[in-house]
Image (tube, rainbow, N blue to C red; front, top):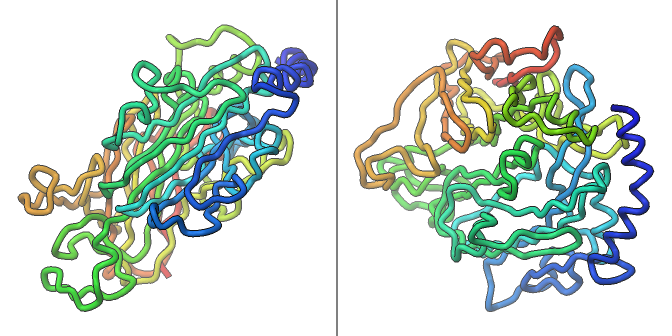
Length: 406
């Protein structure tokens, strides 16, 4: 495998030259569309009155490396944060900066979201010319062209950019991933958290919601009408898993074992325990780039309500996660819908209390933990699939994180 990796590195300069030619010039550059952005960095410089609720973001799509909790260096495909980066430098800057999990996308109901994706290519696999897309999983698109499915939309070729447009009309916990060659690209790490906060958060102070009087700063999971989904602290946690043999084969330019795909690394936000509780971005040992930006540690003061935005984008496994006994969980939403009849606020209340939730790939659940009766201390959120609490013979790693009540 070392020989193949060195071979790919020797081809990297040739690949960079090819990328420039394919992009249409000696200096490949991204193209960002964002209302009120004067310099192409996806940051709004002046408010465009025709788009008062515009939000913009720029992602790169390429490859890179991450460190697993047991020390293994893992090759990945992934998205990277390019917001704020000048257009002219994105194609060079984003190379080998893939992140897992991908940068979080946080929106508000009523936003117009402009998401530019630039395909910077695969530096370690210069033989690949894979297109990439963004699929906003579970969201009703303004047009199918923005859905990310190659069969009905546009896939972005190497050296090119596309700006997706989303009219954000529904709150909830969603997720996003690449839908081009989906099984491979999702297994390789092109996955991220995405959620939308409801318009109810912006109600006028003093508005009565059931028995609760809304105050500025109050937050809710959905437009529930009765404050039953109110929370104080939120955390988005994405369940995932990797087949290290599949990743190694990709780096080694070997046939990919699709039929034998079996996860041996289970992760939360792209990390295994104890890395899940490290608040700092983790840099990989291959090139020192920050590659795992999102921790999974949950922290709150006693008496506060915690919202866990849980999603699963594993292509191989269902996972069950639960809390330490004595930490109650109330499920108030699933599939980016409030858990009431018909998925509407007026429907019959279907909330339920539990200690575990089970999710397959593409599923999401909104869980509220009320810490009023929970003693101060450190608790655990972990998978009850006990074989995924470690990696092979190593104790380090696994799908577990801490809930700290202060």
